[in-house]
Length: 325
Image (cartoon, rainbow, N blue to C red; front, top):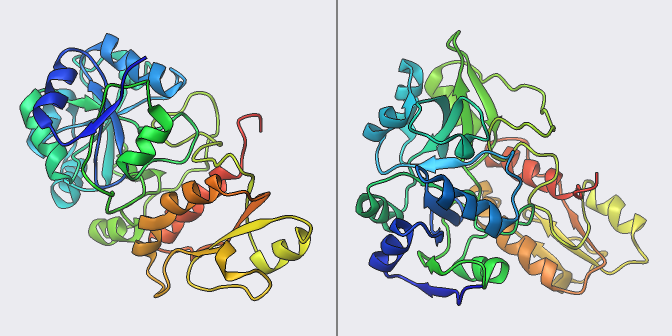
């Protein structure tokens, strides 16, 4: 057990990481639980602290696009994507080089790589001089953290230090894509970079394979059950769901509207002005807050199936499943 400290001391975070410890770090997407990606013993501590299955691969974080070729083989289209959208909420799935331990990739010959867009983390990456493996800094399967306090709530006593970089300004995990040998770009996870933005840049649609909810995910965020609240959550037609659950105490997550059938204090609007960007920023914070209140059930709207709405719907859909489903 650790005494978990929150602070902004990059030197302390750097020293802990170089000693083989784990440190929670801020990114623009969500807080990550970081360790030296080239040190299998350090990476193992990520899985232990999160109670994360070892079959679930990790994303590695680099300081700049120029470093990608140290750790993976990158094709021309992937490099174009990297130059356009990194740093930022995009992750590329690439064929890995031997320097990347199998523990990071769960034995796969592919590695997920991204360049975070957060000044504290970039400074830290330059200081440690090695890549950081970093899934979200929360107990496995629970709602991802977007503040240092969220991290503390889930991992207090399990990690030594949380580098506090304020609230994450994207609020959803990165979008993950892979360019296959035919030059087609495959979507592996919706996230903080809208699919449409990538498609406009490429001039063609992404390939969206059927979700393979199995025990051999190729990259993070592919499991059927994830981002789940302890309180049961149902997504759908909220007006109908309110009627169906009239005997229960309900909390509501909505995009921009409220429902007359439920008192206002039990409704949590993610963006009063109808901004999907703002809704994404607030989603995990609201889900976590609702989970601390005495509700029997959480009801969530279907969000517009466009832009970041696709990623919001994905997270809410996965939050409906329990680990036994």
